[in-house]
Length: 311
Image 1 (cartoon, rainbow, N blue to C red):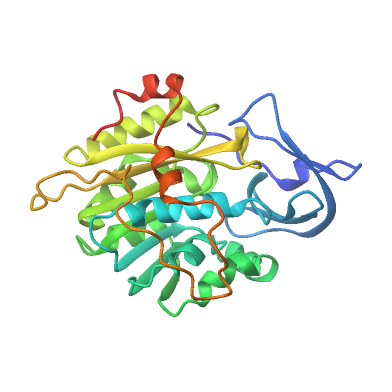
Image 2: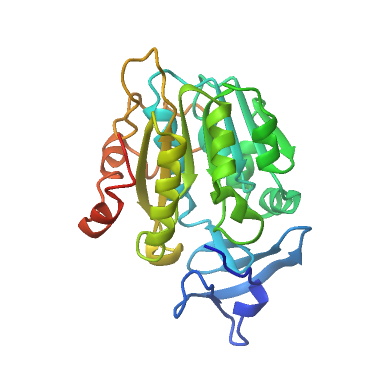
């Protein structure tokens, strides 16, 4: 599952095109015409770049991999946020976001009026700074007074949390390369299971069915061990600037002995509250029908994951 972190400079060409290259999708790369390099630098943890493009607006690149663009970020941010929260049997009041330094998940969580506390554990302050400067429509999530930002090691933050603290934990990580690699390993998922309330749910970035099926199978099998008495499901969304145009989410629920039945994340239990804040704008991807459809996998993936997923 390991790969070598890259840099934005490796993909920039003299003719102004940027090609995203990675050993996680060998032999191919998405190319975007760059109008202007707005920022290039290195934080304590990774290479950070921001490009202005005609096709996708501003683009955030970490370690050479595209993380978000102004044109299509909503499809990922809405799904990773609303799939878990709308699947919960009871309305969430306390949620943790691990990673997500661009602020997009916080923006989507801020739509949920029932939340009283939103914690974020982001290891890289450089990503937060870049988001606030270059991506204000995503970083607006940091302005929610319910948000507590912690610049720290996300694994340690979860390990230090009291047992049964959170209704949901959302892991908005980059690919399993560099600082994000440990977020795909069993000790982290065991810590999240402990930090969840009974009946709570974890939703983590789950890679591409087209490129990373072996990674997904291993991740699902590991999650099945950790959440043995609960449920483990894989859902996906479409997004043009992620490898293969598709990215998935591993959604795991913690068993609740008093509930009498497992949480089924495939069925939305509530709608996203109507927007009362003009800054947020309307939902542009997530709907209850899209929620249900996100768990319907193509035959090749369904068959490969059949033994690892559980309900």
